[in-house]
Length: 60
Image (cartoon, rainbow, N blue to C red; front, side, top):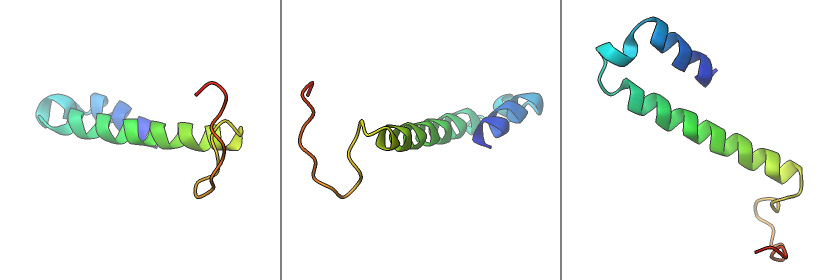
């Protein structure tokens, strides 16, 4: 959804008409990407579940 907002913002020229729009869109997109990557890494058992104490991985 956030990526669609970024794409349509370009279609409607929001990046040039609202000076701060680019900053907000990039901030939100990076936050969504970080959350999705974290959730993916937890489901793949690369990162421990939140709230649990897991031993450090050997590469750390």
